[in-house]
Amino acid sequence: MRFKLVIAIGVIASVILAAAALVTAQGLREHTPDPAELGEPDGTVVADLPEIDRADFIVHSTEDRFEDAYKKLGTYLKATYPLPVPGGPLLFALADVDLPEEMQPAKRTTVEVLKRYSPRRIILVSHQGDVWYDSIAAWNDDLAGVSDRQIADLQKAGRVIKEWFPTSEVLLYYGRIENVNKVRFSPLTADGAN
Image (cartoon, rainbow, N blue to C red):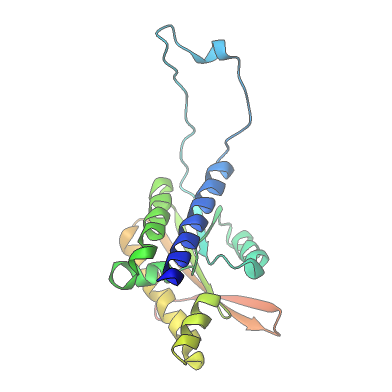
């Protein structure tokens, strides 16, 4: 029970930090205008808001070791915003049916961030060596089946995201570890081929 609570707190904190980074990236600037310029004669304040552009999001896990690899993939794909989520696409693959109650707030927060920005593209990324999957596999004594499960979950997450955001293009990428210190991301089709 305590383990689930720690995971839930970590998930919520990661999503909140990712959303805060997104808001900062959207252009909040440190500027202190003259207070006299802000108010209306009736005491109200009216402010213009920038238009929300249909951004591209790259959804991936929160593992620091892969941070530079995610950035490189995002740059290659011209993805506007990274959206790190504990477990990456696993959060969506489990959706409402299998997702533990403790992780529902993280899923809802991530979905709200995506809804707010009406993404043009949502890029889901999973990779070998993911600590969430490796932990689950070790618990179930099934290390040999990790990659197959990740690919199946990535496909399922893609279907779920496409259902939730039918006007967004959904891309899937799976990273395979090469030579211990490299990861090669390849596009994955809906049927699992890459």
